[in-house]
Image 1 (cartoon, rainbow, N blue to C red):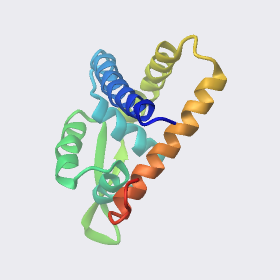
Image 2: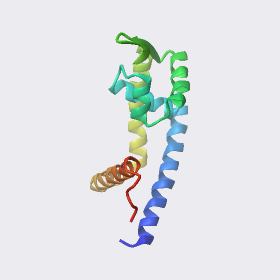
Image 3: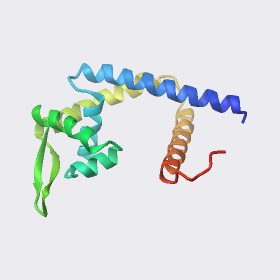
Image 4: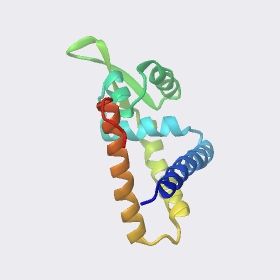
Length: 152
């Protein structure tokens, strides 16, 4: 593969990612939420009871950035912090009934976005693209974990 083709692919990934984030932000705003809140709520539905530190790690965020976001979710009655029975210094995070309902409602929005964005793209192309994106993500994570890896 030529270097020019690789550059074009990276440029398209960056631009597509930016446009998709903006599109999701716009659609989420219509439901009274943000993409960042949405990501937290979806993760907690999958893994309720995470500590704030563990959630920040899973989402690859700085804990201090996550705290403000969690504070807003608590204020809106979507999330609650519960003391960890084994460690008083730690809070565990749980969705409230309203938070669970919002995440369930957001499932339909996620499906609508996927349908809109991927309309008329064949399943085989989606499967190939997904595999390629996972490979790219894993490679990038490998660079972050082993900074001494030489880029070729």
